[in-house]
Image (cartoon, rainbow, N blue to C red; front, side, top):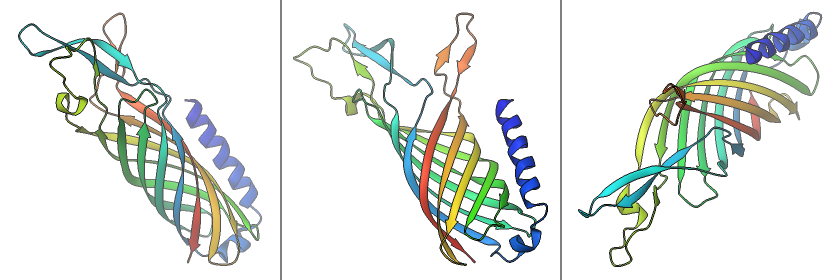
Length: 229
């Protein structure tokens, strides 16, 4: 709900800014291609199983370990087409690579999907925008389970215990951005992204047995090059 209210307020503000300057905005190129990179953080809870050996020589799960750190680097590419009033549509792609500080591997996300864009570019060099979209997410989990009390005479490396696996899901993207244009066709910009993903992975269960966490939230700040045409 808070995100919906924020989006509505920003769109209203941008509409007010552009109400008397549509002519200036009309002169700007209507297509924008962005290529950006920047740091990211996953504030959601993420767990891996704790494994123990059995008398039969197998593997049993004995609880879960919460992953720490969850910082990474994201690379994003996007294209958007804007009409003269600043309303447009876009296509966003983001590749995310996240590492865990307690040395239990990493996971990656690929997000791609369309978006609705509202931008104001009526100023000579500056522009601001807000966008929201929904798309497809492919997650590849390469985190390793924690190993507890494994016999020294029977070592089991992490990679032999669990193979990487992938999950498909739905992602919801919210983007706030600003740009500075050097000339008619080139500029630089900064975007703040919040991406919420939904998977069939149960990460956390409440005391009543209900699932309270089956997805992730990713925050990132991306800086990159803009090409307008």
